[in-house]
Image (cartoon, rainbow, N blue to C red; front, top):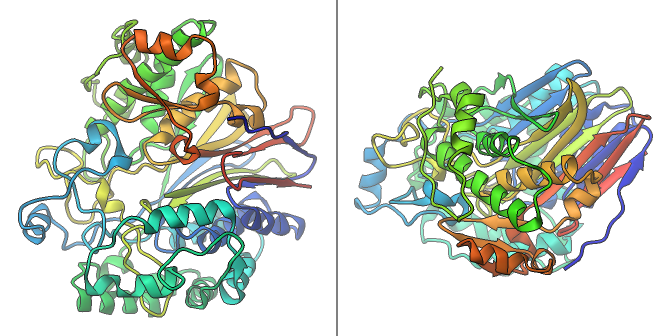
Length: 542
């Protein structure tokens, strides 16, 4: 399957994301005199309304900002309730934890897992505080002005896009358990029990109410006011652990992004608890190999390098405030060289090494002053926990699904902890100068998408749209490998990979391979922008 689309060339500013209405909201802010952070926030806030299966007010966000001189990272990720312990989970599930969540992939999904729905996997939402904190540090327009389009679409409705309708229908196909905490979900997020159809108008006036409260109070009403009190009461009535004290104690965390060198470029990700280290390790391993290899060698090496990165990420990544995560050791050139030496010409099942110790939406924006933003936010699996706060119109995330139940694991479930996160924004520089922001959403696909997008850009010299158009592969676990039809069409590729031990399947469901956006700075001035062709991606500029 081909996805032909031309890159956007914009002289002043640009927005790229997975929904045209959200991109238009960000562009409108740029044209009103807002900067790239203002535009990113207007886009992100609007995405909660126009793409609710993938992200919502009750989710988390992570961002990387280029301020014209250097990169800043924001981890707006919530922590678990103070009452959440391993013993509570085991008691609530009768000592029989859930089956692993497929979206986590690989080793992370092995063994018993946290439940995916209901109150147990709910962590404090970090997105509203993240919007405020980004604005406080970088924004120029009034915070409340960034909510205009989102409130309008929630209050008066909007026609649901084709891609969102398909995601919505897939999410609703997953059964929801019985329980009082789930009763509000159908009322808010279904149309007579079904997903809205493409073009069908959908309204969520209760979400408009919540967004107005966040806008007017700088998110204080969410964490210490009316919304917090309503969440506290709803949890107490329906068996949840989340309390007003948990919400009041929430803080975002400013962090320094981390990087590896890749063929003369620097690739940047955020440090744990996100899985960006998996992408960086894979690229660090590939950096020592010949980039001119044939297509079979190229895909094989990328897959095997990704496996190594995931093995380490799933073994070591946890909340760095609660565990000793060896971030520097995992990215040490000597350690990467040792991991590279494990690669052979056969598909393998790598295990974690021992280094030295020391449902999602994505968007990117840029403005005429050179400010750039890479931002990703999510409630995780379709509609998150499926717990919806009555009268406020939003679903709570189920990020706690990313915890482990192994008591010896650094990411073991516990109170006031951030779980392993799948959502990761990326950024590319060269010799310290910005190239631009990028991201590929899709759970376990995200580091794999980052590797493939960077390789298509750096090794093949593709512009951001062509890099996003390039056919992709997806590894889940073991030796199973899915490839898009256009990749399978390359002569001898599938046969060559099978000869090396990969169990290759050609898959024509685009969502498996993630959805991405990318925006590169044009050295001659302006921006070159790409948007995901597999969904309702839109790149807009002026």
